[in-house]
Each structure stands twice: as structure tokens, then as C-alpha cells.
Length: 359
Image 1 (cartoon, helix red, strand yellow):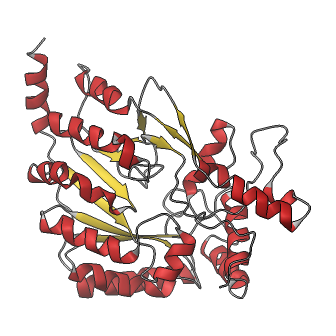
Image 2 (cartoon, one colour):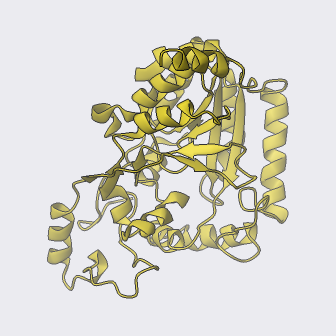
Image 3 (cartoon, one colour):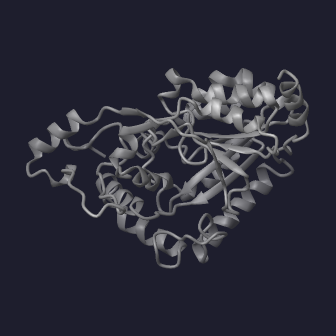
């Protein structure tokens, strides 16, 4: 694909969709500019990321979805510079009066007191240890983490209290914290999930512009496994007619590198993400766009998304069944018998009692 002059390089979304919670949207959107010269000028002036500091009173979010399997999640960042065009979390930016499109990638809110709030939660008398998902919404190792180190501070608190934590990321920056993560792994306190959508570097660069390359994700997997850290590879999302054929090869590749588990999620385009993704697919893969959108609807009963628990992540119908069978055959062949270890919940009380004795 040859990029057009007005294509915003390094970003997934190419538009800002109106915020559905606002009665009126007065922002001048990129596609509304009348001339190509104005659109090019807009792109050059507005590509930089802005960071806004939040001061929340709590950091843990209780998870009610039975699809997730964790008690709480925490997100030191709102919005994500990685720019994955399909990201379900984009819609959460509307609660902050922003667009889930370019705003989601360009206006990042940071919670610099996240680790202090987590420590306060652990010190509460009634706190019961339950695995915390880091992050359940936006990536905890997005680029700004290199400077702010909020995720590292959170992991230090988890290690201090021997509290179980599960990490999800698309960034090889996690290797920076391998000292903390390996220490947690020795006590069965950590699971790591690396997202790997495709083995095609060109596709990954367009679809997830600021994430780690395929080569680096595989290197990170090897580095974590070498330290006996359990790693799940999340092949997500599976996009019909774009990357669905890669699932068996992804499983074979990561199995050879020592992954403990592989999971998958099919594409679902909830709310404004559907508009953002459709704009992206038509600009980048115009010859495949109709087929991708049509087959995505096949997965969700004629819609681009499904909000039902138990159905939304795997889809239903003949196409979903075909993907499931491919997955099961490859898992049986390459990953048979492997699993993630159970979290150790007992050590937390010992560490907490020691902390309380200091007061």
C-alpha cells in the first residue's frame, strides 16, 4: 500500500469520531477540512501526543464480566499511544469528553499516584488477595512508561506485599522489569500475556503502529521464558480475511519458544470503533474491506459486534466454529499439556502482617 499525503503516519485511527455522549460536537474534524492542503497541514500540526495528569482517589476497578476471569483491573494510563485501530478500549475515552479516534492515541491521561493508591488498598484491613489485571483497558507499557515508570512502581508494590498480578502488553518494554517479574514468578504471583495479532511485520506496522515488532515480541517471549516466567500469547483479534489464516502458525511459533498458553479473541467492533476500523480498512486495504466487514458480521449474527457474555469474544456460527477447530487442532499438536500455574494467594497475609507490625 502506498500512503497518501494526508495519511497520518504512526497512528492507527485516521479520524476523530463524534463523542456519542455529548449533545453537540464543535471540534473541526480532520475529514471535514475542505482542501487536501488543509488536511496535510492539520496532520503535521496535530500528530504530537499530549499527556494530562489525573488525580484519582481509587485505582482498582472491580471486574463484573465473566469473560475476563479476574477480580480487579488497574490502568495507570487512560488512552493509549500504541494506536491499535481495532481496540475495544477506545470507547472509554468518550467518558472523558474525548473522541475514541485520534484523541484516544493523542491525549493520554496518566495517574502518577497509582502505586500509592494500590498500596493503600493492600493495607486495608478487609482487603482479600485476588489477582489484579494490569492493564485491563489500556497498555501499561505504552511509550510514556519509559519515562514515568508507573508500571514498575506498581510491580514493586505487588512484590512488596506478595500480591498476585497479571500483566497484558504489546510492548517489549516489559523486559526492563524482568527483575521484578521473575521475583514474582518465583512465588507464583505473576502471569504475563503478550498480544501477538500477526506474524506479518507489514500488517502489524499499519494495524498497531506503535507496538513492538513481531521480531521483538518473539524475543521478549524467549527472554521471559528463560526466567521461568509463565507467558500466555493472546492472538487477538482474529480478523476474518485479514489475519485469520495465521492462527495455527502463531501457535506453532510461540510453542517452540516456550509459551505456556495461547488464547484468541475474534474481532468485535463496538460502538464508534466500527466507524474507525471501517475508515482504516478502506484506506489501507480497499480490495479486502468489504470481505473483512462482511465476514466479521458473520461472526456476530449479522452485526459488527456482540455484547453478550460468552459470545462476544469467540463469535458464533460456521466461521466461528472453523476458527475454534483450527485453534484446538493446533493447540493439541503444539501445546498439549501446557498451562499457566495457579496464583499463590497465601503469601500476601504474611507480608501484610509484617507491614502492619511497623505501625
